[in-house]
Amino acid sequence: MDNLEKSRGGRPRAFDPDRALDAAMHLFWEHGYEATSLTMLREAMGLTPPQIYNAFTDKETLFRKALERYHQTEIGFALEALSAPVSTGEAIRRLLLGAAEAYSRPGKPGGCLFVSGALATSPQAQAIADELKTYRKASEAAIAGRLAQGKAKGDLPEGISVEGFAKYLAGTMNGMSIQARDGASVEELRALAETALAALPFGRQNQRHDSETGHHAGPFPRS
Amino acid sequence: MDNLEKSRGGRPRAFDPDRALDAAMHLFWEHGYEATSLTMLREAMGLTPPQIYNAFTDKETLFRKALERYHQTEIGFALEALSAPVSTGEAIRRLLLGAAEAYSRPGKPGGCLFVSGALATSPQAQAIADELKTYRKASEAAIAGRLAQGKAKGDLPEGISVEGFAKYLAGTMNGMSIQARDGASVEELRALAETALAALPFGRQNQRHDSETGHHAGPFPRS
DNA sequence: AATTATCCATATCGATCGATACGAAACCTG
DNA sequence: CAGGTTTCGTATCGATCGATATGGATAATT
Image (tube, rainbow over all chains, first blue to last red; front, side, top):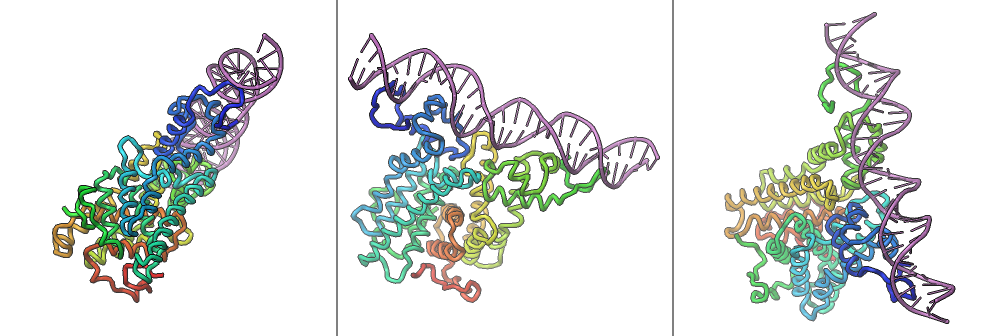
């Protein structure tokens, strides 16, 4: 059984499934779904193939559980930013700056698992690619939801496209993920985020918190 | 020999290497380097394995030649935009709008091969991932070069970071590539590009050409 | 026509892929 | 302790991976 609940009799597991899943998640994050082999997983998780398959069914299920774990443990900043009781501009600002930090954490693979986990796949892994696309679309929808909420409250100018800005912001975060994978530092990603925020026709009056970030409030990077 | 020059005697090739390379390029574009198998290449190129290896050495060399071909045949808009005798703002505008079109061409895989060709790879393909990163860095450097040129001509405000804006623009294009892979239409990508342009503290006076694009000149998407 | 060089088609290579069969070992229940 | 259940470790499965050996076929060269 792949049941991870309390045992109903039988030999107990000799390993911690959560630790093993964590190791698998980081490996998938670094190398993507298909390029991560069972041999690599075996070594990183410290398990034998039957242990992996007994606990996680198969590679695809393991990856899906790794996605859930990533969502829960690595990108809490997103929901946090979008649900914070602040202005829309400040919420978006926290979202992008949170991404800058999350995509460049020391000791972690660069970028976002939802982007680099399976961008281009073989036909056999199309379902995985679709799953990640769904995660990305959900992120964009969450941003759109927050913008729509701000628009309803008069936080945004009338006549602007919520979907258009959501796509721009989601695209910016995706771009930050690529730049992070190419080695961009957290400072560079923050500068990128600040520049991106300058495109928004709202929230500029909320750009303070210099004391929090230790950086200038202006949207334009200075030499 | 993998020589593609004139034969020095011997049986002539029964296929067109350029057509075969084109088929391989589109396959790599769609599925990425590692997920594209020899079987898929064989079918798409209409060749037998020995034909492929005789003409292109091995899979890695074939991919590198596909990258060169992609650079030459699919993204000429970039160099064209950056070298056009126009203002810096207009050049950047042409760059982003060109990307919107190139990343969503009907009948072509979505996005940019330099982004989706090998974002996350196995350790064995690290050299390929590095090669693509080099291409992306070169694109960013080309943008930075154009911005520096504009700065020298007084086309840009003083005191801004050329590298910072180059990273923002390269990141925006990378993000557009992801959005294109997720099915964004050319109109949506154009809107994203226009929004991104609004972050720039220069070139806004050059936003005309409505008659060319058939769209509004304003940077903000409207509902 | 003879020689030389290259390419073609068939068949298949060793390595690695994801996944499993098998029987012994370890725990819970009665 | 006996029975039932689950996981353990070892060995290995068939399929697919990228790549090639071999020998006949087709051209330019001499």
